[in-house]
Image 1 (spheres, rainbow, N blue to C red):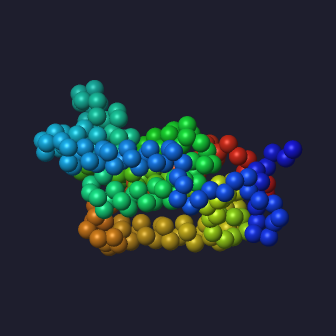
Image 2 (image 1 turned 90 degrees about the horizontal axis):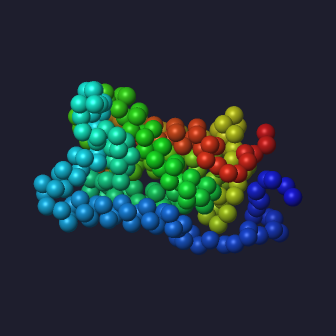
Image 3 (image 1 turned 180 degrees about the horizontal axis):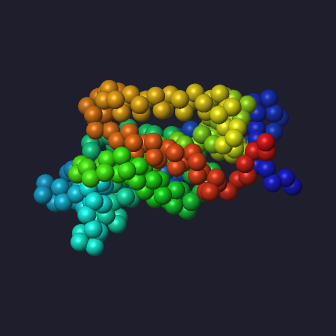
Length: 246
C-alpha cells in the first residue's frame, strides 16, 4: 500500500471516501468559534464595566510588559501571548474572524487533527505576538483578536489545500492533497496569487488605508505577518501526511 494520501481529480473514476458538506465544520472549529463568542459576551455584556476592563487588561497582549524586569510584574506577561487571541474588540471584529476561522481552520483541522490544531493555535498566537512586540517594542497599546492565528491557518493551508496542478480548494477532499515543499510551492499559480493578494492587503492596512470600516484602523498587520509566516514555514512540523515528491 502506498504511503501517499489519495489525490482525486475531476476526471477520475475514483471517489473520495466520504463527502463533506461545505458547512459541516469539524467539532474543534465549532468549539473554537463558540469559545470566542462566549468570551466576547462575557467581556461586553455579562460583566460590569470595571470587571470587563480588568479582564481585557489581564488577557490582552501588550509589548510594554516586556520592557521591564519580568520578576517585578504580575504574571500577565506569561499567558497574554496566547489569551489575547481569544478576545475581540467588537461584533464586526468577531464576525470577520469567525468567518475566516471557519474557512481556513476547517481544512487544517481535517488535515492535522484536534490535538495538533490546539498546539498550532498556541504557537501561532505566540509567533504573531512576538513579531508585533519586536516591531512595537515598549508600546503600551493592547492587542486582541484571533487574526494572527487565522493568518497562520491561511499560511498552513497554502501548503496543501490548493492542487499542485492549479485550481481552487475542494471542500470535500482538499485536505487530502499532498503537502507541497517550500522549494516548489510558489510554482502553484493559485498559491502565488493568494499570497500576493494577502500581502498586498496587509501592506495597505499597514499604510493606514481602511479596508473594512472603522475596525481596520487598529489592525495589527505585523501580527498577521508573524502568524502567516509561522503557518507557512512551520506547517510541516504539524502535518501527519508526507509532502509531495519533487
